[in-house]
Amino acid sequence: MSKFPLVARASDVAKSVGAPSTPAGPTRIDEGTRARRSPHAIAWVFADGAVVYEPERGVLVRLDLNGAELWRQLDGRRSIADVVQELGIESVVADVVAFVDGLRETGLVEAQDAAGTWLSR
Image (cartoon, rainbow, N blue to C red; front, top):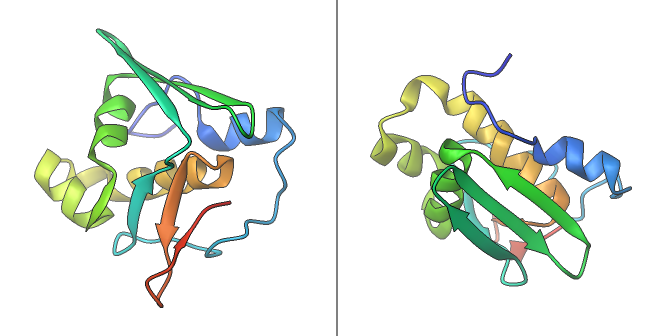
């Protein structure tokens, strides 16, 4: 079980809504990857987390407090490692990378490739 729990894993959501299994963007992200929220995604933040909806893909994900805070931090200016360090959660960096990659797989997050191009699913 992940040390960084989510109410719903984005990768599980991708499977449940029939998202393609082959990403259009980078095949693997790591802690050095810069990621940002999709400009098409809409988020509602609540006391116990958030709900993120991407209307073009029909993806809806509910995040717990940890996931909601990470979502808020994905601004594209900082790497995943920078965000993890700022939040003081270095011990779970692998879980955070997997979480962000799951969001990327569903199209809720875009990742920047080596050429500096922002790629969505």
